[in-house]
Amino acid sequence: MIKNVVLDLGGVIVKLDRAMCVESFRKIGYENFGSVLDNYLQKDFFLDFEKGNIPEQEFRNIIRSNIKNDVTDKEIDNAMGDFLSEISQEKFNSLRELRKRYKLSLLSNTNTIAVMRVRELFRLSGTEFEDYFDNIHLSYQMGMVKPDPVIFMEVLAREGAEASETLFCDDSPANIISASSLGIKTLHTDYDSDLFNSVTGVV
Image 1: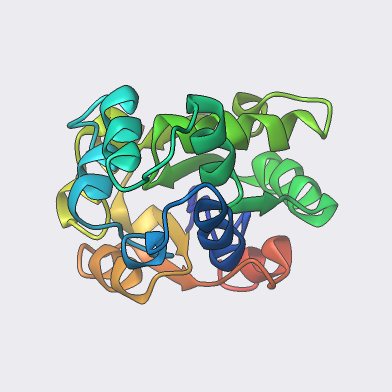
Image 2: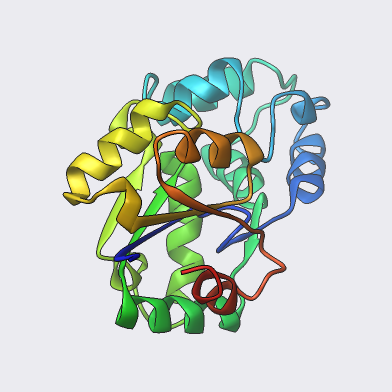
């Protein structure tokens, strides 16, 4: 019996727009930002940022080192924010309904700049990010990222949850495979799916 539902953020709850983000960076002078931006798992300095290994100002300075003209922190943050484009009313409704039935948690590979944007999107619903979840697990705070099995084991430990009683939902096949290998029930889904019906259809 499923008691716990753990949701991914980007690509499941929040719509991702990689093309818009890459174009926004091009406009401020970073011509090949697409080479470091992935929908599922970042690389190099970006991965270090999402693991919490480097602070946001160092991340911004690395971005600046790839841009010839002067750019502000705000310009960099806005370009980063364009990766996270929207949250539909259906997602807000689904989160409310799922939390009535299950212990609802979030597990996301993310960073401090992206979370600022996420908070803005949630506030459009008139509530705060934290209001929708019992627990929030963010990679940069945990010092680890999906699909490493260690992050799923850590979430289970923090939740006090059994793998067999937990459903993990993500748009990344690699993350689904990793969670499934630990006995966690999984749902491979994406932003275009009806979240509530997708989850309740498999539990």
